[in-house]
Amino acid sequence: MNASPSTTKRLNDFKYLSPGSLTEAVDILNQSEKQAVIMAGGTDVLVMTKARVITPGILVSMINIPGLSDILESDQEIRIGALTVVADLLKSKQIQEKCSALAEAAREFATPHVRNMATIGGNICRSSPGGDLLPPLMAMDARLTIVGPDGERIQPIGDFITGPGLNTLDREILTGITLPHTSNQSSSAFGKITRNTSDLAKINCAVFLEKTGVDCSIIRIVLGAVADRPVRLPGVEQALEGKALTPALIESAVVRTDDHIAPITDARSTADYRRKVSRVLTSRTILKAWETLN
Amino acid sequence: MISINITINGRSYETAVAPHQTLVEVLRNNLGHIEVKSGCGEGECGACTVLLDGHPVSSCIVPAIKADGKEVITIKGLSENGELHVLQQKFIEHDAVQCGYCTPGMILSAKAILDENPQADEAEIRRKLSGNICRCTGYQQIVNAVLSAADEYPRHSKIT
Image 1 (cartoon, one colour):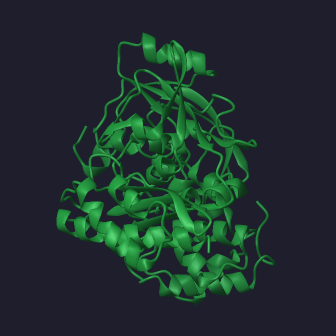
Image 2 (tube, helix red, strand yellow):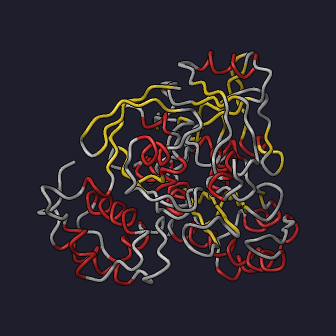
């Protein structure tokens, strides 16, 4: 084959399986000797396969596994199936009302074309430091349901991601995401610095906060694309918790952003820029979440 | 090879595809639908846009197998009995076509926008066309064409 650009964009030949149940899918992951890669929406797996970043021996499509693409709400929590596409997060009334940060991130996520195919589970398992859905899910204290040969386990998303593109999955499958119940005196917001709407984030940020009386009683702040994984900002959180938030107070608190980030220079931005703008984006996003409660 | 059933512009096809074939390859190479343009090959540019069950997707990053049992609309599915779809007509009137390579994808994305919300304003149109890159026009004529087509929606919209 000629090494023309179009041939390098072709996919390598792999074995394709589309199991009809989770058990069958887990069995394939655990019994195959070749590298088995799970494909949900395919928007990342196919692009990485074309670029030969990964060369799966077996591609395991989730397409025929039923019941993994619903958004269900109970009194206590919202449960999102791992195969829910980003466009459906954006349309969901529950997500818009109870988790606006996630709805905003879905709105800013890649292009409409990608949003129609890409899944929330895929974005989590890709575990990119800059994945747009990750800061909102971390700020909301989302828990992941993961199925393996020994059954099901639950893990907070903050513990799941262990590095750039790395996570705790070990021949397992992410099946769902649970967002805990939030009080009606809580709100969340998302912010993203990017070159244009379809680009990956230079920096992204999500804030969840709860108000008791006039004070901010709980705040969780997450920044993405500024470290080897999305990071919480406990120093900033502590400076704000228990206080009525004002722009001046937020300005003084976000100085501590620096303590928690380790940005790099890459194709999208420089470390210096990311460091400076992290404070600005954090401050804006906190203010946005706070103002929706007032 | 895996056999798939796929409806393209209202006509159904059965074809055998390899697991590593993308939808754009099958549309162009197996089924002769060369009106679907192949651009970047990695889901960035939108040239290969088709409507899959009514939603715009980049057919270069959709495995053909995933289109099994689904309905695909390409640019050729828009005109009826030789009469252009209102979006096609408005693209001509507003000089929204220069080299033309992005046009099939651009019009299909625009159709999905107006099908969902015939009252879409300029901001919504620009935001939702962000998956389609045009290197010639600077977008203004394209946005004008879509806004002008919106004025005549849904009277001219084809039920698909």
